[in-house]
Length: 195
Image (cartoon, rainbow, N blue to C red; front, side):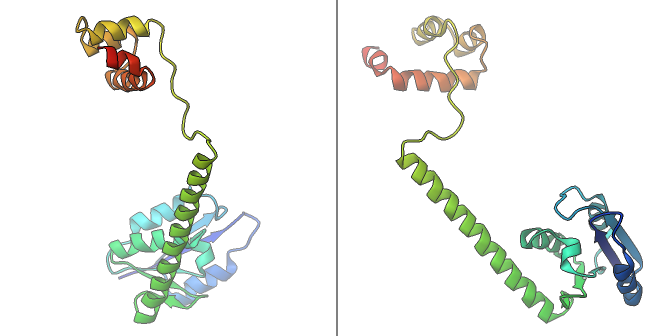
């Protein structure tokens, strides 16, 4: 059972003194130090620390802000620690997941993050519905039909060519060929009806 510290400052000009004092006071066995902005998702020392910790260890930080960029980020990190049976202590916020109060606080954080996710998804669905109601087309524009499409399509439809042959002739993959057949037939219903 080891106490593993994680400390971060945004730039080389900032001092680590306060975080170093806290780590020394807590008797940490090893400290992972990051000098990088919190919004940067590529934090090598954080990744190393998460790989390094073992069951029974406790990760210690001076404050939540040094560990996570957002509640969602925090919960993701805590979830990784929980799955490894690793505790978490934040000195400033007085959170200790090795005790019942700390676990309750994290449960509240989790509920708030879930509510935030649901609100984002709800606004996204409302925005999509509103755009569709205004006639706005969403997604990538459909690929145009390649040169020689009608001839190859007709040959395939009449059984003169296999789908693989028709797709190869048009320089398409088979799934793309089938998608284009569906699009063609949806927009040319008279062809389907006459067959």
